[in-house]
Length: 431
Image 1 (cartoon, rainbow, N blue to C red):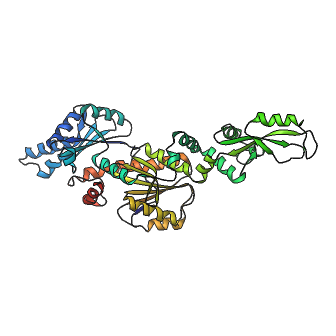
Image 2 (tube, rainbow, N blue to C red):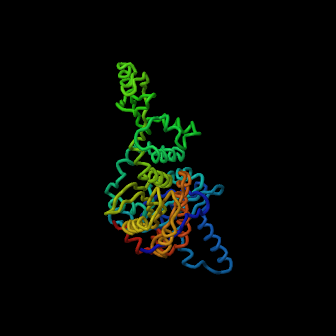
């Protein structure tokens, strides 16, 4: 169980919108034709210009460019003359050409911090046969579909659009905090009036209205109570009219104290769905899954692999990410479970997400994992927005790293990461 521990995901540059595609090529020379066609739309071939400039300068002094330099045509970057976007092309041999029919594939990456959609439209106009994701991502997705075919504990809940939308209401930090405190201070059914003055409701009428005005959050019933002897409410009914008709029948006279003081009490209880979403941390898994979905559609939420529960798995920038979420303190057992799941799935990065401070012992265990085939990170944030931002920073960093390592590693034709080497990566892609 070895890996690299990084406490937080450092932002490299700014948020990156990375979109990946691939298209079949019959021969390597078609790669140049593809690059030229896209460049005609007004993009500058950065590598091509550099090769041309160096070749011209060498020719002027009677020399020729080295063969290795000329062969770097396997990669091309087409940059916007004005803007912050680029299209990156890379030639890849198709290891499955017997079944797919084409000997080569061109990976096409659209990278931008603001205008990726426009660049994608441009590419689609120039490339007739365009498949989603890079070639290696597509193979990894195939492997995940085979391995992650068993539902986890929260799958039915998170896959139900209506119930998922209700869980998303808990992304509101004030609402989630209010309900969590309420669950700790007033378990079971309680009358609205006493509940309103529990912390944090005392000075927050807006939150009170949001809570008690939402029938999905509170299961509401109506009970008969006595304001004189304070008899505990009983005979609760889901319909207020039914309770009122019974009070009218007995003339509002309390059988315990004889006073004409019977009234209708509104009883509230936090709905079971919200209780579970808060106490079991389902809201956090949903939030992390939504944050990841903001970067890639290759995601799996609440899956099971053997005995391991996998909260969120994603493929992005040719890497496999695993997010283990806990709305509470992360202890040694949580770390070991995450490491075991990361090894089973052979991920590139495993990220533990928590809403509390990280105990020193947990940090020591993660740091002890050392250098190895995967990175271990931990995100410790309390607010929904901070959690979302931290998750997306992890993915944004990977998008920037992809560009760096792809351009720096031209000698390896199939390279999706520097960890593990090309042979290891190819083995992973063979489903």
